Image (cartoon, rainbow, N blue to C red):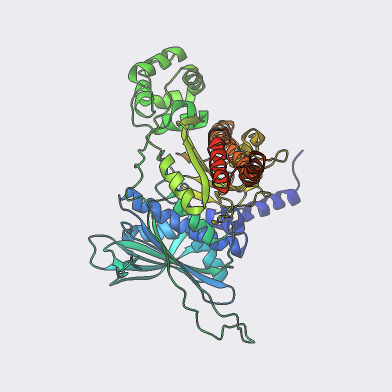
Length: 563
């Protein structure tokens, strides 16, 4: 039955209303997906994204990173975040796209461990600042061979997801960091010939505590012992006039500096090719269409890892396909047959030189610096695979010394969990994270700790878990929790159990020593009374009484009560 004119008109009206939605517009309305759902969290997310970019840039350039983070309150609810590094700098042409274009970066398409993955973070922080204060992102960048630094201010055109340059100039500038002087050594500032500074002003809220910028930076130092960090917070006085404007100047804050504890950079990860067992059907189809290889055998052996020329020939034979066939023809006609043959072929696991773990000694050193621990240990598991992606799990635990400091939890409170992914601290969404699930799934009663059913164990202890992977499966774009992949939960569980066994040995030894000391103290208390009784029974002199006491003490030292 033909449609009426009214229906046709409605359809045409609806068609005229359709338009493309840019990624910037989408995330502008859904900024909570990126970690900007409240002013307090927005401040942390901005610092996190800027610090991650700086660390990646320094390490990729082979430079020991030195960073400064400064938070300056400019109004009752406004803060300016400035992060500066001694990295290689950014060339002029790339600055606008890196800092004012979402989904632009160099890390998304390569299989190599890195902090950033999606090319969203720092641009999203600038977009949030633009949304809440109307200000531009201010970038200063100087490359090693440049005479002048580039000073660029940019905003995002959210309808087109393109950068808008508000200021572009050259000036004399070089990154300068506060000095860290030792005893009798003046603290001279250090100036570098290269580096980058990014400043974003936004609506935010600064607080201290477990979910704060302060905590994030402290945990950064645990996972990145090669980092030298300077931190300062400048807050306004609380006196506000009738128009809501601050009436007093900024209170001068003091720089807090942390020296690096490792003088060597982590082992640089190497980029690898996709593993066939981690590639899904649609992705394999796209790779066959985009390849530069002229034959099916060539694309299998050259575009994938762990596939030799002979193995590629075996896969073609198993699939009943011509090894010299055009890959584009296979992509459109027989890709399912090829996909099935690939997954039926036994292949070596992906190479693991694409990962860079922290290492057991540095984990122990970092935890010992964070908490006054009487026992500290760490375990680094061998690399393994999920969905064809290599990953590696590291776990460290620190059991607090009685009465010690360092921010540890109390004996009747849940243990403190520190979660890291590719050396980046994860502070939010702990309950939705695979790390928490794995720790709760361990029976801690076997290792001497109380544990409510299905919950974290209780005790004065810190548990640190680090996952290194070429692609961390976060639950959302805000990168705050790791998805519940069974392979990851299993590996975390194995590493936690090994640390738990070592803790159990320590706690049992401490219990035995404490029990022996308790019994010994009782006997020590009554030795003088026993000697006095023997003196009366045997009619001994005062000199004999002293010898009896010494003899009884020597007897005690030869018993099982000796500590």
